[in-house]
Figure 1 (cartoon, helix red, strand yellow):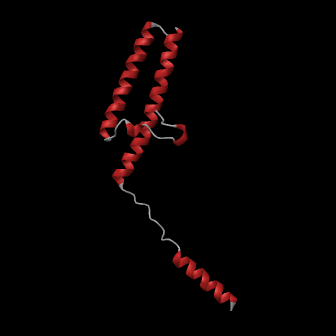
Figure 2 (figure 1 turned 30 degrees about the vertical axis):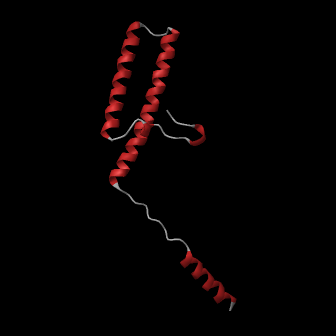
Figure 3 (figure 1 turned 45 degrees about the vertical axis):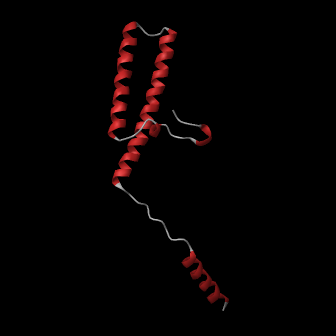
Length: 106
C-alpha cells in the first residue's frame, strides 16, 4: 500500500508543480537584442582602440601620417557605429550595459 501512496504522491506533486514556461521567440526582438549585444561589443572595442591610439600618440611612437590615418579610421568607425545604433533604434544608454557590482560597461 505504501507503493501506491508514494505513486499517488508523485502524481499530485507533478500536478501542483508550476507550469513550464515557454520561450517566446519574437524575431524582431531577437534581431534587436542580438544587434544590441554585437553593437555594444563593437563600441567597447572601438573605445579600447581609441585609448590605445592616444597612448601611442602621447608616447611618440606614431608619425604624423600614422596619426592622421588612425584618426580618420577611428572617426569612420565611430560614424558607422552611430549609423548602426540608429538603424537598430537603440539609444546610447542601450549600449552601456549594467554589469551589476562592477558598474556600467562604458
